[in-house]
Length: 67
Image (cartoon, rainbow, N blue to C red):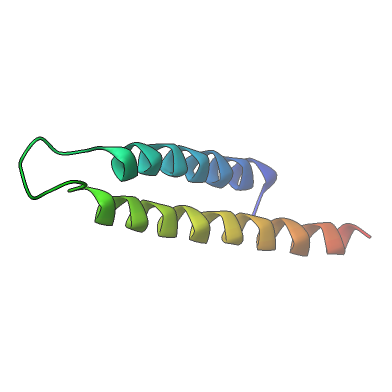
């Protein structure tokens, strides 16, 4: 993977983490649903983590080839 693609993956991961913090802390107005979007926050964190791991593995493989 190219450096630009790795940076894009990391930026998307950071954006997903930021969105997930909003979803995790959002309190619904309906009674009985204190945090209705918490499951979405967990899925965004999972996707962001996968993207971050993919970018870091790609970077480490590429950096080993240059040594």
